[in-house]
Image 1 (cartoon, rainbow, N blue to C red):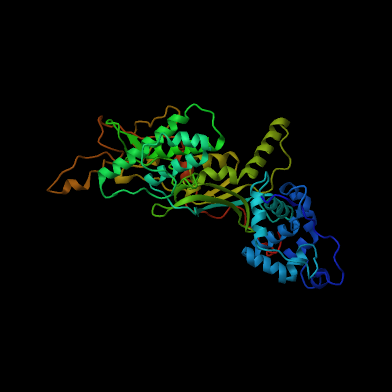
Image 2 (cartoon, helix red, strand yellow):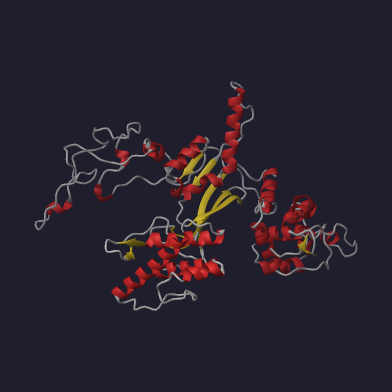
Length: 489
C-alpha cells in the first residue's frame, strides 16, 4: 500500500455542456450495464466504502468509485488493465457509467487498477466489490438456486526445486531473516565451505553417487545445527517462520540411516513443499496424466445467468470436494437458518421455505461420500457425476457386498451376483501356473473369508450409484435463458 495517499472523491456536479450524460442518455439503453451503473454507481460503490484503504492525509487518489466501475466493466468486457484504461479515456459509455463524467475528465494509468487490487487483497473485506455485484444480481432475480461446481489449475510462477536446492534455499532464508548478531552466531555453526549468500545449486559432481550423498549429508547437518541452536528460544515471527520452513523441507525429503548419514528418503511426503519461494504451493493433478505445481481455483456458477457466485483457492493437492462447503456457504447457511427456525417454532413449520430447492451439478470429483452427505443434509438435489466402483485384477468391487457400517464388517454371505470364483488366466499357460486368487482380494488364509476396508460412505453404495453418471436435467423444467444476463450486473 502506498503511504500518504488519501481518499479522493468523485465529482457529483459536472459541466452541463461537456457531460457524457446528455450525449449517452438517448443512445444507451437504460437496461444495459452502462445505464444501470449510471443510475446506481453512487449507491453501489460510494467512495466512503473504500475509506479504510487509504490514509487520512496526503495526495488524493483516483476516486475509488470510478475505479470500481472500471473494474466491473473490465470483467464484463474481458479487457486487460491497459485496455480498460483506454476505454475509460475514449469510450463515452464508460464515463457515462461512472456517474456521467465530462468528456474531458482525465484518465489514469493502468497501475491504478493494480494498486486497487493490492489494497483490497490486504484489507479485511477483499471481496467487497464482488459482494455488491452479487447482491445486486440477487435483488434483480438473476441468481437462482442452481449451482455448477468446477475447478481449474493455477500454475505458480516459481520454479519447482529439487531436494538440494530446497534445503540450501531454506538455510539462506533463515540466515536472511536473522538480525546481524544472530546471523553471526548461526554462521559460526556452519560446517560446509559455503556462505549461503548466492542462490542456486552448490558445485558438485552430481553424476557421482558418493559425492551427492556427501553433499546432502553436509546440508542436513548444517540445517540441524541451525535448528538446534534456535530450539527453545524466543524469536521474531520472521525467524520462527523461516526455521519452521527449514525443518519442513529437511524432514519431508531426508531420513537418517543407521550409520548416522542423512540420505534422500525413498518416498514422497504427503504434503510436500515444492518451493521455498512460495511455501504454500503444492504439486497437484487434474488427471492421472496431467500434473501441475501451484494452486486450484474453485468456482460456483449460476448456470442460468452465467454469473460466478462464489470462489475460493486451495493448494494444488487439495481435492475438489473439500472446497464444496466454502463454495456453498451461503446456500448451506440458509438451510441451517430455516432448520433452526423450525426447531424453535416446534410444530409450526416455516411457512415460506425457498421456492426452488438447491441443485448442485459437478463432475466425479464432487461425488465423494462426504460431499454427498453434506448435500443430502441440506436437502439438495444432487446432480454430480459419481464414478462407478471398480476393482483391479478382476476382483469384486465394494458394491457387490452388503456392508454393515455399525460393526465395521462385511457379512460373510456371498457378494451379490457372485458365481463361481474366477481363476487367473495365466493358469492356462503351460510354462507357468499361478495360484488361484479370490476375486475379493489376495490369496486367503481361511475358506470363504473376505477382506475389505469400509467407511461410512460405503454403508450405502446404492446411494452413490443411484446418482446420474453425468450431470443430467433437473426434475423441474429448466428456466428460460435470461437474455439480459450479460447486460445487467
